[in-house]
Image (cartoon, rainbow, N blue to C red):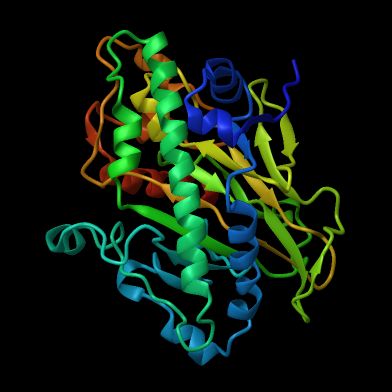
Length: 353
């Protein structure tokens, strides 16, 4: 049957109330997303950061160039047209990547060995000095909510799987210094090829990490930067429900939301599963969309091990909209870093088809 968005209050999340029904409804049967209402400081933190994206995306090209980080393959700072959808460079959106938890993540050795996982932040200090504090503030709020949620995921997984390590997720989320915020500016829609694929700003994908916090979105007039109501009722976030139907997810303005990634699917033995989703733009001239997901992950050396005795087929369940997990998580205990590398390759092939 048709489920709706699962919403829990921050108080219930933070107080350790029993949320096993909500966890099951969202992450075992539902849309793979939970909205959290009334998180202290969230709305103000979100609004302060998102509006910076308009100014950022319209800085002079030579300034934006100084905010690029080529050696991390643009995993920090400004990225526009550097990422590919299949073989084509993606100019539909500009991204500003940052680590809100740490300016110096990992050890010197980690940073040397895993430059893509541990890039150093690049901030537009002169042009938009307010961006750095706003980004760190929003990221911190989101990280703390993810730690709270991870405790509930642990409880749920423990109730389903006797061999599950009862503090696994919460400990991993608490100690991590690997978080990636992605402040996104989706440029106004330009219909160049007239084919249906061009209507989505980000193609179908599962989040491949652990937890993804979503800050909701705003729409602006691309010329003036003025915030407007979304002029296209079909624009926004879509997920595939468990029956394979595409449904639109409207996150209430007073909520942040948290999506589940495939690593959580693996370490919970498939008790909880990630769902494919994509973002569709507003098909209206001169309207841009701004959002900021934040990916809270572990160190790349973290071993993706299923709970002893769990059923590998339960872990491998996935939609045909994304490359099969069995081709990417190819051995029990595979490192998170290797899994990401393999996932990246498989998506590239999947989109090219």
